[in-house]
Image (tube, rainbow over all chains, first blue to last red; front, side):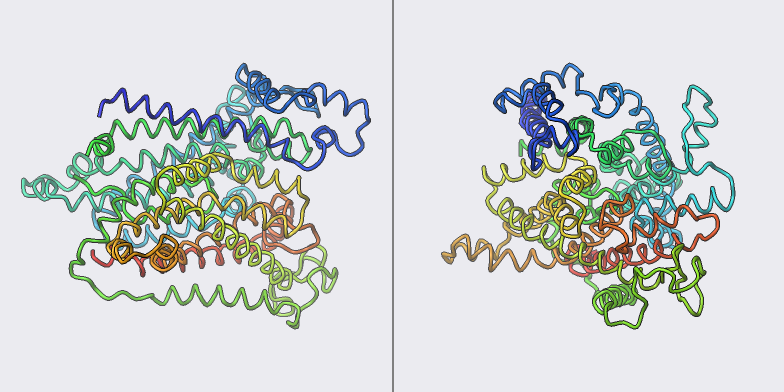
Length: 319
Length: 317
């Protein structure tokens, strides 16, 4: 199939999804029982304040008009402002997004750095001792909720041994080393869970690859098993790893908040939790919109990359 | 050419990322291949067993459920009664798991916390299976426009940050056991429907379905008599993993103080309350953390064992 046509079709599929995601984010505040203005301001709100919010949010207009106005503002970067401290949501997100992104990127890099060598060793002797032990440990990590892992890591590395700070965040610009030191435990918390996913995935794919004929051929040529693993087997086995690690990035954008809360990191997740507690619903709406759109776009990008990396999928429609 | 993603992907749902699991997306790719693999004749099939670890997991789950069920008649202290013993007593003979900072008995709080976890785990996934399962079977059986529409809706739902949505739902609806169950059940619908659809797809192409159709069976009969029983087995194993995920989700909510209201005991809440005293009395957090970990592990392990037990493809290897 023509690559351009495929690209066009994927783009067309993206539009209704983005439409639905934005509509749902918009309706988030509308669907709540009661008056949104009262929900935002709390039950002790004065009549004037309620009326002001009604006017401000354009609640007197029909809902499609409200949606379009809201979407127009959102596209130009105006997500409204907090009713607690008057900071605009966009400002708040700009401040906090780097923290969350640092957390996500570092943790995924660490997870891959742990998982890839372990999967190579495990797959090269499938069923051996290392394989069984690492698979079992990975299974254990998959079962640990992140808040338990975080608490246990704090206990061992911050409370019993004062190796790393238990909470707190230093901006990277202020002190790179302190920033990284504070990031160690939260990054480890996320990385240990993700590496288990990656390890299991890559191990399975590697074992399947190692049964291919061309691997036997390479062995027959007398190539070392190290060379075969790294140069022949790793690349064709890493398609699903690439996809899943990309998807993990998307999933983590909305999934770091508990780690951020445990380690008191000023990221998007802890902003969401704070805003929910203080009933700052416009900020919550902004965050939900951002995370959902980011998730959709990342999935879309991965789908594209995957399609063009793997000819089997590209040609699947043509068969 | 390497064999692309293996069946393991289908159920390898990571507990931490409830719903937004990357695997459920890959699953689509895997499912089509799965269909062929099922048809492949077994090569050197060996007899499979559920090993002792499976039975240990099942026993632990059974014990937790039994204790949770019998909690009101067990000879334990009331879970919310303060100063039944000196505060912060470490685990010992008088108080098996110690007492907390208000002198409440940790053992009875953990048992009562199990009630919350089990009720939330099973009821919310029950809701998810009922609604998500129905949608998934419909989408897998009627693939054309209807199926695409259903899955499109589910994909949109999957894009939302699930726990943030859950948090928001609960703050709006109010903190109560019922609302926690509803919120988690609602969140579970989309991922469950995707998994059920994938397994419906693999069966709706099978020879017994075409046989039944050629005998003149109506769609409803094919779905309920041919597809449902086949989908039910993998669903059982997936359901156990899903219960584990729901327990973790409830734990996360109660860890943040948004599940059942205090003083009602819940595992996540106990872990969080103990954090402040971690340097002096680490067991306050670590004991409920260990119980929760073991329970989640047991559900995951039981589900995973059942999956490979029922999985036709793996036995062929």
